[in-house]
Length: 217
Image (cartoon, rainbow, N blue to C red; front, side, top):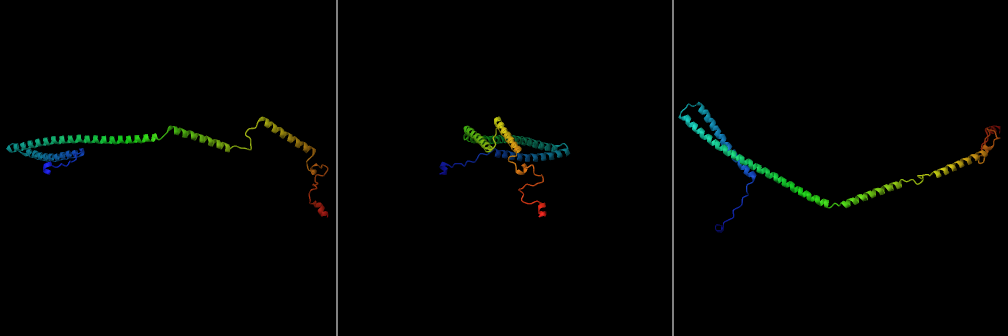
């Protein structure tokens, strides 16, 4: 059956930019090894040519050096191409990363924008203003309550001039009456009104006898 209908080939994932960059860098690294080997051979040939006289052997050695130089130029050119490709792909990878970061930022901003719209949609300006008005009313009522509790009920806050004149006149009459009573002796104790009694005579309401009478008895 497999021969008739064939089998589906398993799809391998396409290489990513990082994989391609790694392959190019590995290839350029292998070319560096070849270049180092060629440079060592050329250095050895150069040292030999300095000590050799002109002749067929020196000419043969020069031909070998020319061949090695051509190989080195080709490898250097190939290495430059690989490095250029690697750099271009690195730039592409960097651009892709930047775009991905930008998309993440944009998606985050969109999500935040939706959340803000939902939150602001639950807030009513009229409700906030009503709450503020209620708070002002409550504060005013509290102030009125404090003023009511601090009011003094015994002492009037304001006294008119007529009330003041009446109070002063009543006090004057009361003082005149007391002076008249004092001058007439009415209401004063008898021992204070008796002017004929000696000054050193004690009042009769004292129960104890004087000291002289006690000694005579």
